[in-house]
Length: 154
Image 1 (cartoon, one colour):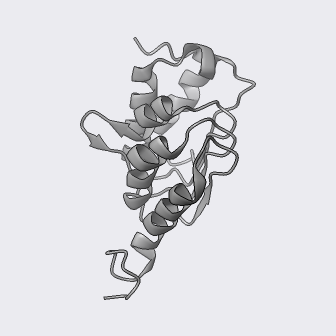
Image 2 (cartoon, rainbow, N blue to C red; image 1 turned 180 degrees about the vertical axis):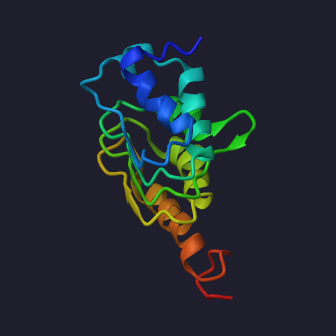
């Protein structure tokens, strides 16, 4: 059971149904249901809906107390890595994931999101310089002109 509360279900169903009018997803801490009731399955389903959506441009999941475990359920599910063809802006700031979440989930998501141009990730757990280097390399993967991430453009 997903335990997605009714207040969030409507928002998430628009993402699931690939609604062309739904360009952004903002889950807010004031919707305390997100923290209290979202099951691991709910986070996985949301990740799949994001991956399948062609219209979503911006995702704001800041300040949701996302841990390494939760970010893993959201960005990486049992059948593979989640990515997005349409997302341009992603805000994961002010959460609680660290280097483990960066390695296992965030980096693969970034590498599978070719149009992503803005990522906010500050004020999380212990990401450290290694984590930020991994993020920068993942973002450069699509920005060097040939998609291999080596910076040479060919």
